[in-house]
Image (cartoon, rainbow, N blue to C red; front, side, top):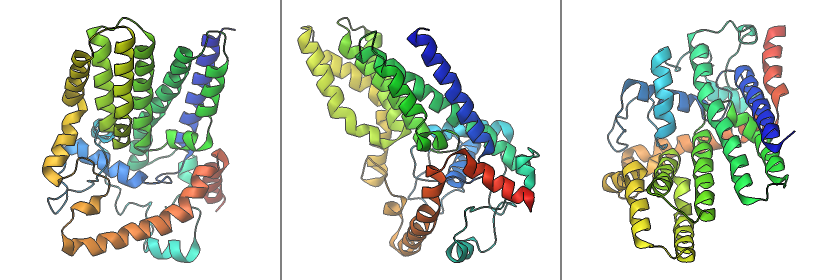
Length: 331
């Protein structure tokens, strides 16, 4: 069996595992999933990027980069995703319950979830999760393609790298739920593949350079952490153009122009609105009289939600999700 065939089998296996995980993970039992769901619903109602200093903020708005949630919004609009607040999945006095009981589940579940008799909200969420499944599958494929560009044809390293990446427990978990990391994983793995191809090739067309700019812009709209690699991109362009004795300035100008038109405008917009290009914490932009309440909310979110829930949910695999559903089925 050729490496390409092996890689396609691994890709299919990962897709099936990710899809199964997305189906059996109980509703909203993932870090930030309710927030991601509501932010997707916001973009189902409008194409407008929110202005975080304009209070009151529209329902569902968050400070995350927009691309993933714009795509989620298209799905949410098609399925007419309902509001999650005050749904039957929410406990009354939920924070008190978390503090006192330290439960394995943050939301209310019934046997119907395991029996696939889902309500409108559950169907909407599971259909929206498919976006993460496909994005993560694409990430795995482009990681393999990058390895094929780096290592010799007979090397098995790309296959082993693909396996290690695809079946990392935390990656499997996030691949089946709503989370912005799935967007940056996909967009940046595709960008990295294009960058390595640019580094290897001696002939660079207008399309090659433009694709680099497009995908770097898409990466910025996916998550701002991609911006940290911009110096590396300049180094690659400079070194490669020097090596093949081709113009550098025109290449950099073309890359930056396409990047600005694709995603760089978002940095300029943020700088103009907030005085900073990177939006990392929503509370930076709140007026002082709203700051204290929001900081308290951030503290509760981290210490009560992240510490008590994120670790077990990310570090245990499929039985954790099935276990919750089975427990409620028995009751």
